[in-house]
Length: 414
Image 1 (cartoon, one colour):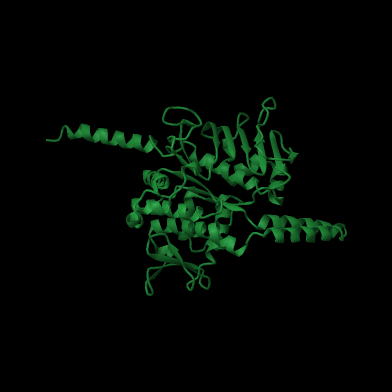
Image 2 (image 1 turned 90 degrees about the vertical axis):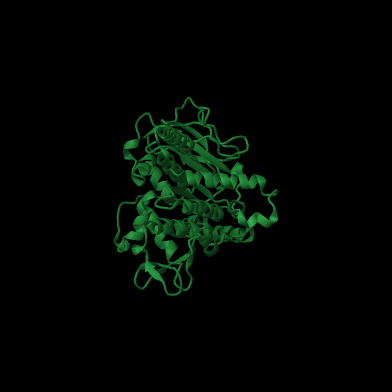
């Protein structure tokens, strides 16, 4: 698992966590959930180690992070980031007297330091090549803006999201629509009129721009998750070991039989081949529950788990304010622990059994006052018990206060 240390960045005072397959961050508004999610997104992007990341290193990685995720004001001389990943180690303001705790099996690496306070160590042998998608809380604007193709902004997370949205939706046509999770409707894109549609049957179709805010929120999320968890891997299949060997031999042959200008092209081709075929997708989703009815929130969580948990090592980061999302996730964890004991005749009646998720693959973090703590107040710990189930948490505390106030007031009701 990758390790991430953040100190004094925006609302975050001190965080030291190991990232899992599924990571969920809960806490009050402004507590730092999105700050952590954005840093995870950026560090996952660094794992690609391609021409774009090289250029960013020259210009300044923290500068790139700040501009891309609108966090320019979050960094000071006291800010510290240390990311220990599969392909890269990234350190920002890490004191020289503190040795970097290198990940096991990282192997040989190249070190580069272009900007003051920044250091990046790139593994010679890449172990992963992730497709990284940051799905912001503002995602419903792609559903509501009819002239989205005219949208143009700086190279930021919203523009990147728009680009991925257009790439994904073109694959779902009226003839081949995409079912939207448990809602009994389909989505498709009509390229000829540049409009997104929802169909509730053969004769009932409405433009997404006219749909409810819940549909406008869930559709972009569902479409992108579907395409980036399976579609791109069917379209751009990873090379087999035999194909990898042929590619290496071909590039080696070309490298030895080219002039200086062609040699540069061969290197660019090598980078393209290595970078185009992804090993997995890193999903970062802000507030999946946005504008959704409680049951739909739970159905969406089950849908997300089913899409990322089917063999390929996809990874998921969620930030949420929803107890329904958290409780549905807990159901998936408990289902994994008891799935072999559930009577076969009622398996289909208990939804979480179909979406059982190994608790060892999940970390749930509660953020308060700029730090991650468990229910005992211990720093840098999840809020899960020894079996991995979610126990005492922020939402429970809020509900207890609500019910306490209600019972107090009830005593005055004649």
